[in-house]
Length: 93
Image 1 (cartoon, rainbow, N blue to C red):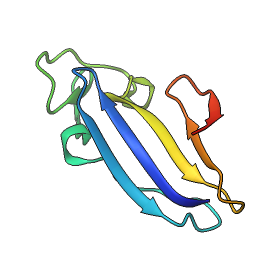
Image 2: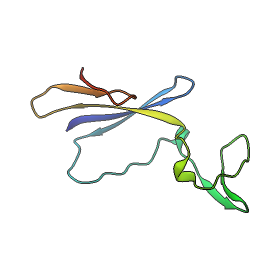
Image 3: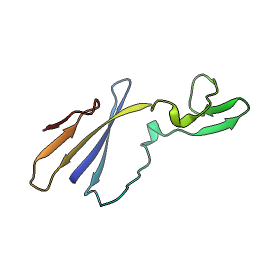
Image 4: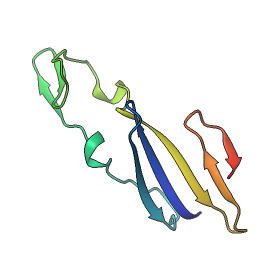
């Protein structure tokens, strides 16, 4: 994949683009952009999200919904631009 971009879409409509460039082989992990970065703190009764407005503990933070949705755009080796929409649909852009 070439010209790979991760597009983070917040609930309020904010759009943050993280340009990756050429995607190397293998697994690639990138941190979330600052507005979506979360810190979980273990407390009695479960885990608490540090940026949450309510302090209701949860049993497993890995099962909580993300604070954003992600769309992906890239170009393949033949030069065709592709878009993977938030719902998972892949189409030519």
